[in-house]
Image (tube, rainbow, N blue to C red; front, side, top):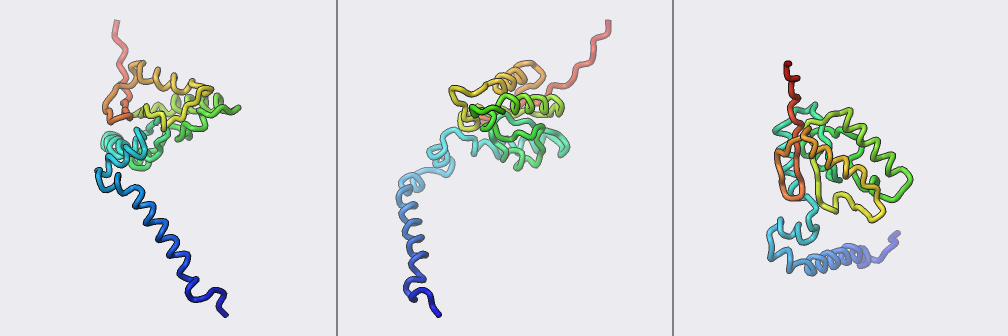
Length: 177
C-alpha cells in the first residue's frame, strides 16, 4: 500500500533543493567575490574563528599534554584544537555575563579554579562576541583576567587579532641577603 503518490515522493527533496539554491544565490555576491577569510569576517565580524587555529597550534607547540590553559572568552575550540585541558570547568563566558542569580558565584568559582590550576598559559579574547557583556553584567571576571595579565605573573607571547596568549612567567628565586 502506498501512502503517497509517486510524484509526491520527490516533493520534499525538490523543495529542499530550491531552498538551498536560493540560499546560495542570496550569498553568491559575497562568496564568489571574496576569499574564505574575508567572507568569515563579513559574516561573523571579529569572532576569532580565524585566529583560533593559529593560537591552538602555538599552544600545542609550547605546552605538553598535561599543561593547563585558561581561556578568558568563549572559545572552547582552542582547547580542542590544541588538545589541551582547561584550567577551569567554565569554558564559556556567556552564563557568567548574564544577569542571573549565580553569575557572581560562577565567576568566583572560575577564578578559584584558575588560581588552583596555575595554568601555563592564559588566553585573553577581546571580541565582544566571545563575552556578550550586557550593561547589567557583573564584570568581576573581566577585571580579574586583566589583573592576571597586568600583574607580571604572565607575559604576552603571541597576539593574533583579538586573541592574546600569555605564558606564566618563570618563578624567580629569592634574592640572597
